[in-house]
Length: 155
Image (tube, rainbow, N blue to C red):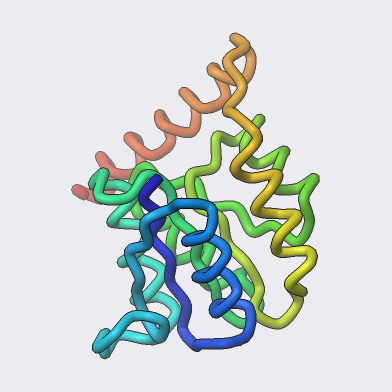
């Protein structure tokens, strides 16, 4: 799987994510402070680059990081077609996949320990999107909101 990975700083967690994702056989597209020569390390820029890679199909999924994870998730969610979820534990990651069909995982550089990050990744990659009618309807409604917003803003 191709994973777009971004962060506004390089930390022990980002180093772990690179090693762990590559060990799981994923191909990484890196953005921000963890990419060679990327001058755009601010969280809105790094996160939106990763999200755009997912939205364009250059990456299958994304992981965006910043100090709290909140800013990275906000920036990623500004990209049409992205459903970024800030996850602090495996159960939240599992729910984000099942009910929200999240395609971008947001992590806090400050609050996410390496063991918890591993649990989150395990849950994220092992949990499929739900296919039941109710959840499909919810995702359709999210897409309708996106389309409505795009039509009112001219995007």
